[in-house]
Image (cartoon, rainbow, N blue to C red; front, side, top):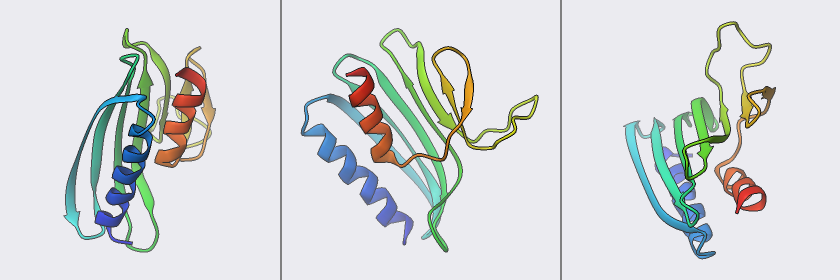
Length: 126
């Protein structure tokens, strides 16, 4: 899959969720380094002024591989609700892919799909 196709899938998903009128504004950008490697960044503002900030450094040469990623959702007061990422922690976590929860804990969690993140936000917070 070309990176442009992966990006198109994200945009299509955002468009579908925009039809629910729960998304007030969205912004997405990409830095395509090769046809199969690049960075996708964006912000989605929901109707309650909560925001999802996301960044994915993707390699799609063989399959979609998220080399690094972050999906951070916060409320209108900029308080963290959750964040999925694979950033290295100090002290080191027992797992690479994880989720930060509202209570400050960190749990193991696979890299989410973009549509799963939107579904989680809408089901749990909107």
